[in-house]
Image 1 (cartoon, rainbow, N blue to C red):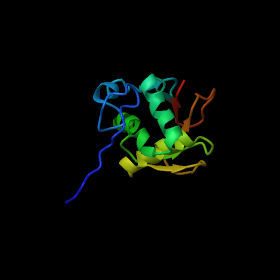
Image 2 (tube, rainbow, N blue to C red):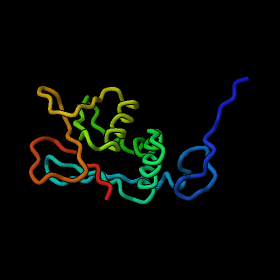
Image 3 (cartoon, one colour):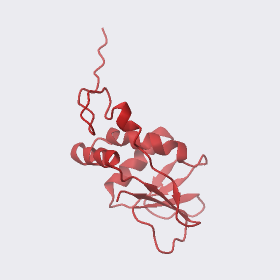
Image 4 (cartoon, helix red, strand yellow):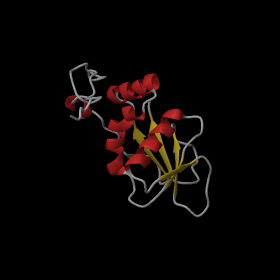
Length: 141
């Protein structure tokens, strides 16, 4: 007999009983954007209370599945062509988010440096003053 273990913790936002990290009502509050800042910079705002609870849960547990509800909202917004994401080496949350995106859509790759000849998107937390390449800002506050 095969036994499947379900997620037995309450919803991390409202504490209601659920089989997933977030209940259905809290999952509806995940709105991320995109918002265009200029021709090279787009921002996705990851700062509402539900998203912050998911990021705090990731900080506590280190489990990338805590970021899955955010990734499920971001995946439809991603470009369909393969991209190389340039992630900052010191930001563990952005790194985990990109790795989770790559698990869902293997057409994307991640690197820490600029690579010539590839379509690239620079990841950051805050919009740069003068971007030189396409930039995606995942702002949390």
